[in-house]
Length: 293
View 1 (tube, rainbow, N blue to C red):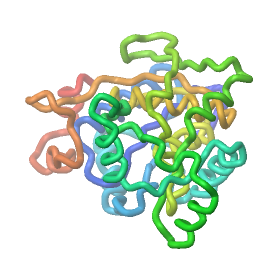
View 2: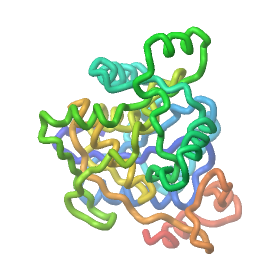
View 3: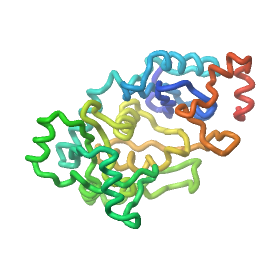
């Protein structure tokens, strides 16, 4: 397929850490239809930056399931595990501006620190996790070097206060255009709600936030269509785009597919996979009809 830079670019970006379910099918079909309706390109990206949980068999299952649904995508497929150098380069730019620091606190230590501060003071990020209380923010070089020498695991966090201060030369205000999720239109981004978010780890040069932001820019993605559960993450992505001087896509966060109890489908809960439905004799046409396609 000819890569026309004037055409809109959409992407579907699953992780190969489990089998796809109806929620993934809905997202892939929604994205493919949006690309088709505006004459755009449809990309498939394999987000396998988590080397511990990703499996080749799940990656192959992604190709099999999407092909069964009748979808086609451009080749080659971008696999995050093959592009760590891109994420290191983006991370280095943030480190060069003094916006990143190592944090050696475990999740249990962070939770304990929040509890010790008192329930009333224990804020949470949009995902419901305790807001990082800054245990290693401003730590001395000696303390950091001592931990490094011990080989202790750590996360690299974005110093949110410094990052937002760095935006002052660009007016300090950032926003994004949302096409589906309510409210629609231009949304003022508020990344501060995430606190000092993790953007990399000792052994992996990017978290989800940094990797997808870099990938979308490198692949020329102009429209990001994904589930409503990732709407809040957009606030962090917009900040990273500004700090790294990257182009800004248009966003569309679609509804989620829920089970009978109103719970979002998930791989971790081992909800019925597309492969299982196929093996039970359900046709791709029936899946498409069930999902409104």
